[in-house]
Amino acid sequence: MNLETKRLQGVKIDHLEAQPTVIRCSPARSDIVALGFANGQVFFLKLSTQETFIFDAHQDSALLKPGEIAPPGMQITDLAWDPKEDNLLVSFADKGMCLITFQGFTS
Amino acid sequence: MVKRFDPQANAVTNIVWMTDRSGNFVTSNEKIGVVQYWNVASNEPRLTNKIGIKGTNHMTYLDSSANLGPRVLFALKNGAMGVYNLKRQTTEFQTETGHFETIFSVKYSCANKDLLASCSYDGTVRIWNSNDMRLVQVNDTNFNSAQAKLEKKIIYQISWHPSESKIALCTVNGNLMVYDALKNKQLGHITPKPGEATFCVDWNTQDPRYILLSSAQGLALVVEISDYPACK
Image 1 (cartoon, chains in turn cyan, orange):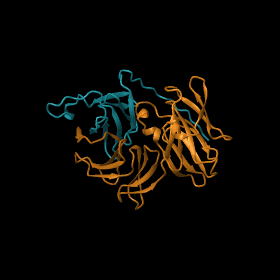
Image 2 (cartoon, one colour):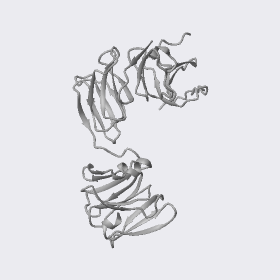
Image 3 (cartoon, each protein chain N blue to C red):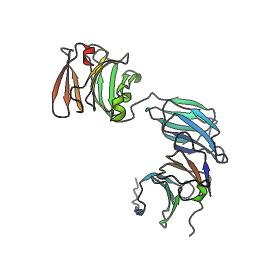
Image 4 (cartoon, rainbow over the protein chains, first blue to last red):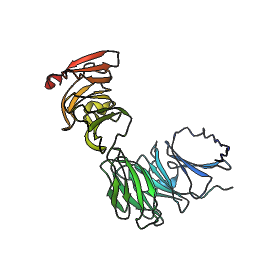
């Protein structure tokens, strides 16, 4: 058996105080990972460059109906990447669910 | 771009994309055993189908290249798992329910060599037929008791009656309970040291009037249970 040692890469994400609840690798983009957090944030990470992007369901106005106040502590209960497109489904503990179209990192 | 779906009665805890048609996905939740069919074009589920009597712990898509159609492998909260055909909307396979937490004790019946009992952190005792591992009976008295709703439900140990189908069990709440394993009927219970967990129980094989019990504070107690109603 040919065993190959690969370098493990660590990415520190301690600027996020909430606990991660779900992690999902993108089936279409091999170096993109999405993490869901207890505070409702979705954290996108590009492993090769360690670029990050945070999507906050509470602060994104596109998610809120007019006059609606974002509820606190919307824990993410599951994430699912669309196997055919760059869509990510996100479910929350408050019984909500949304679809994010991930458009990649700018660089 | 972000799209928001209508909130459901229960929080979605599992999402699985279907590969048969673009935009189709199914969801399940931990509260009730249903799958909901969705398409991204609609804010509401197209269809809701029951797959079990308990909520779903996990669900994985089984991609079928044959004519079987898209299927999901699911694990329910009651320890059962199965395969559900999303196209035919039927459960193709489902296992017996099992423990869904750590099993602390297993004991063969003294009266019937084919029976064995298991107890668990999940607060249930399950009786199994050791020939075919069929689930014969589930006792969830401790799981559903008023006391267990407020506290933990752990059953640490069980002991069979030396000649009958009765079981003595001890719990984290300090309870000693005696019940008929086949009729699933509680015969009596006693809490000799309230608030102290009881870790071990042993039914006297020579004289079934006595049950030995150990408490968290280092005491060994002998309980006389000759009259079951008196145990209450």
